[in-house]
Image (cartoon, rainbow, N blue to C red):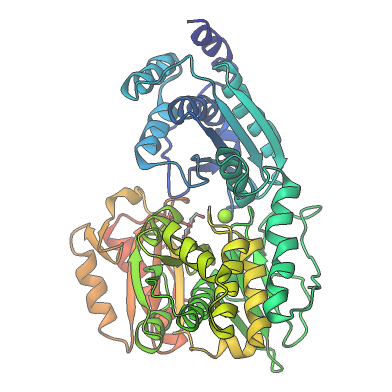
Length: 518
Ligand SMILES: CC(=O)N[C@H]1[C@@H](OP(=O)(O)O)O[C@H](CO)[C@@H](O)[C@@H]1O
Ligand SMILES: [Mg+2]
């Protein structure tokens, strides 16, 4: 076939470095940008085939999110704006790792296995982040698409959630919104203040001062949501007045954390768990006021602070579910409920409403026979549906929803912060020769291999009060992540260090032994 000849010719321009093996990880492929050209070309091919299979537009986002500036990466977006399905992640890994001369065979295998009709038209939307490597890498994706005769639209610089939104709009014939950057801002920003105004008389203005807009400096370097969350301190070089509400996004704006410093200069972080709590409490109250019997749940990962889970389950009486790390897992579980609020502790999350829930809320909002209280609650629920990006966690739309909730409740960031107190915690990374030696179970809360590791962790945890710790191989970096929490920061730090040592000794640590934090 003509397109296969074209692939042979073009793929030679995007050669695979010998011996390089990469896996479609927690959120696509990620590594140093210099090693990714062939991956991008191949993901252009795969997205085109996926588009033929689904008879819909597929998205390809070029970004390495919170990773250092010199890294890059790519993730695929499925027709409804969700992450690509797991079986296609496997196809992606196979295609990415095929030797140059086996590329066509690997592609044909996928085409055969998925019974793809190659005469079907294909459409691929491509977006990229501000990394300097992103321009040529997204061009490699476009080359892959055109090698298979697919149509592409290059959105250029967009956030990851914007690309998810575009794909969803395109495949729902504009019902979700208009598939343009302007359409996105109209849906999530302009209409937010307008739509919350009638029932709540919100001020139609939100003043924001923007720092690190990408025009200078290195992306994520000593700033960004991940830095603020993991280091538990504000971005370097930003002046913050006491009590001022601040937030940080990550490199592709699908994560957000809030923070402030108090009059003593102490830093306070309001992470994904605090956002999940604020949003789910708000929605639960509205559902009660509206008299709607809809099942609401919060989905978290093992990284959720123990205090948040305790507060949600015991004080708020909200159902809490724990899943593996990675938004795709949380999204999936959230879909099981009428209202599924999901957030990773690092600030990645959104709210999903089932079709049935949306219809019931809509009906009540339009019902002329209900009392004012129920009506107002139904309107607020409907407005929340309108302003939240249900395709994926979205820093911009999450921020606007949080701002609306704080304004509606007349709440300051300090008041929000005191809903519950985080248990002191610490996250560390350990370098090992092969992180795959660690296998986990129970939503990554227990290590099955290597032998003796979980027992060692259990024994260490017993030494501290209110303590919890777990380890898992990262899906985005070549490290093992260690998490610990306990009643004091000293204990959390000591526990995290001791567990790091156990990982280093039992899971093949490389380099120097982890040093104590103090
Ligand atoms: C502890 C942590 O924050 N892990 C992050 C990180 O995954 P790892 O598999 O832990 O590297 O990147 C993912 C993609 O952005 C994000 O979904 C996840 O929450
Ligand atoms: Mg991100």
